[in-house]
Length: 255
Image 1 (spheres, rainbow, N blue to C red):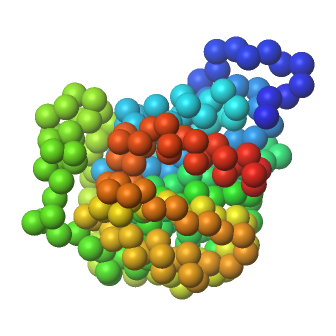
Image 2 (cartoon, helix red, strand yellow):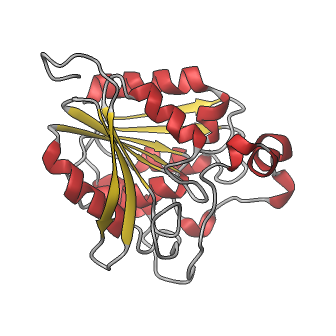
């Protein structure tokens, strides 16, 4: 909700970097609309805050909330390499160190590996009030990626051939053998409301991952499956009206 007495205006967009405890520079965009609540958006693998789909989501939510977007290490304008969820929790904690003191209510939308990172952080950090977890792997060792099941038109062609799809894409991969926490072991430690969203046609992370996380979660929780829906951010691309409506309704009830 907007602060009383402040009229709707074009948001002030602040960009900058945050420094993690292990000395990585995390790039961010902060859309300041004069709201008391903020929504943080955590992208998935191979995406960034400049991804056209996530910019569309930020615009759709910006009339009611301040928006904070950032790049995990190895993505976008952040430095370093991506460690496959092993060290990226430091990135989200740096975001919370910066943003939490500024707002009375904080929501988090996280996609795919960004959602797994978020689960592992929120299990030990209570500075978020409501969480939307989209297409999250329950265990990084059990990702369902199947080359023969690729959605060549919806995913591959969109990313490689469509200028809009290429915007904000890319990753600098780092070591994959580092120890990783399992979200399935941590989700039950989260006490805030969680909405799980998954596409039934997800060829990267099967919908059973969200079902398993939902079953282990405690407290207020809800799960939604998009029939024939694809993976993570592509749910926003293919079902923008429904996706935004589900997000807004959840935060209206829980923030």
